[in-house]
Image (cartoon, rainbow, N blue to C red; front, side):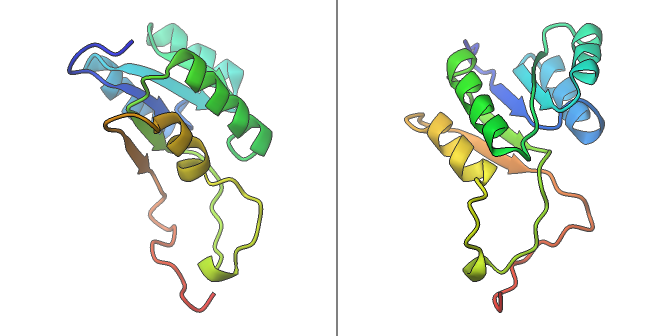
Length: 138
């Protein structure tokens, strides 16, 4: 349960780098934090060094794992306030020509989990070399 004035935060790719840095900052500020990542060993190490951080091992690049994560969050953190997409797949496609069955994390995961809440935030962390705009030509 979220403490008044504090948020429940989910950070994908939170086992190292920017994700871990964000997780440490949110946790130090008193927020409830869950991190995800592919390496169970790395997540266990973080949990050992930062008591109170929750972990969930999965690969957001695998559709079944995204569904498992969504189900897990609905069960253990239904009050999710903030999703930070720090891990994922970078694809460059024309938005009009994309007919793939790729479940986008920010819509297929976050919207159902945040639905019914009076507030919530979704943030995406991207490397500096990642494209920002969409190619209208497809």
